[in-house]
Length: 85
Image (cartoon, rainbow, N blue to C red):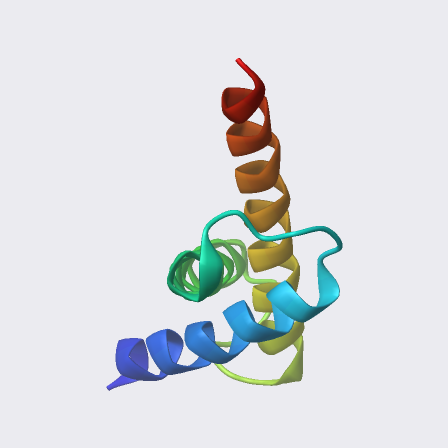
């Protein structure tokens, strides 16, 4: 059940990351949601393994948003560079 919540929070995180991240999102809503889910899963896994925070809570949510923003910025950089080549 824990991972189901990670995925649900990931969808919300993807939407928030899209609103915060400047620039046009080349992938649309679905890619942003997937990046949000991946950012949430990575933040959960890394934070729990390093003992930075428990599985739930405000700090986990904020870390998920930051992870999704980082992935979204990387996605922007990769696809912007490929579009100009």
